[in-house]
Image (cartoon, rainbow, N blue to C red; front, side, top):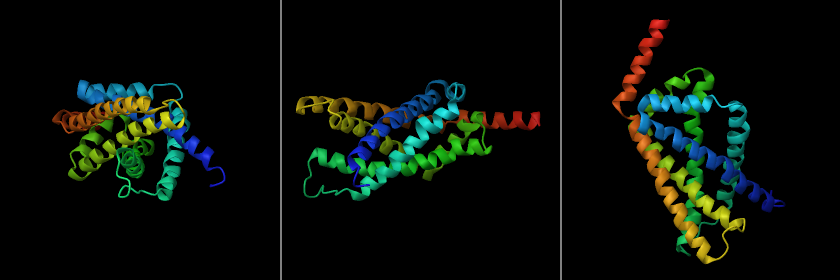
Amino acid sequence: MKGNSFYSRKIHSLLGVIPLSLFIVEHALTNFAAVEGGPQGFKDAVAFLNGLPLVTFLEIFGIFLPLLFHGVYGLYIAYQSNLNTGQFSYGRNWAFALQRISGVITFIFVFWHVYQTRFQVALGNVTHEQLGSSMHDIANSPFFFTFYVIGVIAATFHFANGMWAFLVSWGITVGPRAQRISSYIWMVVFVIVSAMFLLSLNAFRGDEFKEAAAALDVFTHTAA
């Protein structure tokens, strides 16, 4: 691992930008449909994603496998890192430490979220139409609501701060001024995307998602 750590870290950085960016943005937009359109809006957004051509191929090779490499190698980097914030407590050093900490939290959160949603669909325990009601149950659990709030904030910070670091490490933002402007831009992105996720999570707690779940159960039992 040490012999080719430069290339491993470059691949880790690149795969973090491509799948993590897509994963975060896609999830933010899809979940925010629950805020704008309620249960039907969220159901339509999920149906749109699942209607994309080669969606399973895209999920496996475009998101899950790259994220798995990024997450596992990121845990290795976090383990190897020297978090010396007590010695050098300036802003960028704190951002470095928080990037590693948020990466660990994000890895755990994404794994569990996929297990509670996408994996349950794959097992046949939940349909795509029932994901809204599943999120309703999750959001109304005090433990999981707190877990999801921490998880989405950690994931969004990891994404935004990671994008700042990516632009620096790949020589796109060169010089203090460009890096300072980039930090402001990604700070705004962090706030906006975090707000979208938190508003969505709060929307899932609404009675309309509970009523939609009850209506779906009645329809299912009637059809049976």
